[in-house]
Image 1: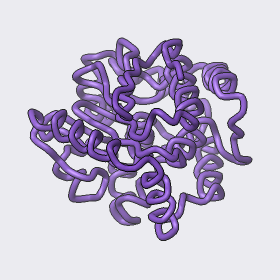
Image 2: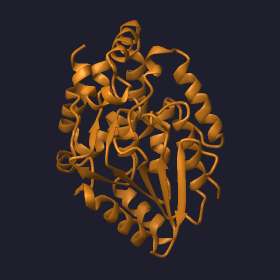
Image 3: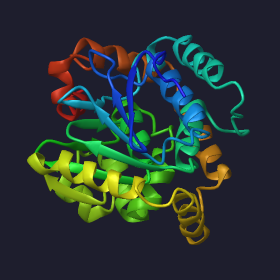
Length: 286
């Protein structure tokens, strides 16, 4: 199976492990290039017998996926264009009724027969954190990583599966705290809240994840999907109806005031490297 044509990703398959490096400068935005690339990869790898474990990492030392493109809030054509591109990238994958394309991406990656592992050594906010949370296992570097859902500071709510996935992982009270408080969470708190499996010293992250991935990939191939199926029997997928409620809330929040605020945030430095380092501070100052 070839993945060389996916413009925002670099994929290496070795000994049953696909290492997918997100490489979409300048910020790894979840935009009309990265979103179709991820969806196409997921659709192809599902039937790739040579891949048993998938590790997602970033080529950017500061940003895993910064967040969704702010153009989704400022340009009425941006999200429909990204959606059309993502649908074309995986034409045989059906988007369930009531769900948007980002929610569908989260649902699709969670349903892969392979084990998916996220390796976080930078920031993952908004749609980036939603994608990261949808992976089977997640590991983050102490002092280097940050996870956040800052959407409420823009007048909307997490709409790519963030409300439902975070609630599933952290529980209702902590999900409300993190979503409405819009706090950037470091690795140690993320571990305590259940957003990640383990917080690891930055210098140990690569070796730990690599060893785990190779160990799992070395198992008898059919053990992985049947184990995932057994675990999912007690921890079933998020109902599509829950995504639909989130999606309805997202589109209900859109309006001229949200667009105006988005333009102000862009003018203040959001979606630049310097501004993204202090995303929450800038957004809270508006």
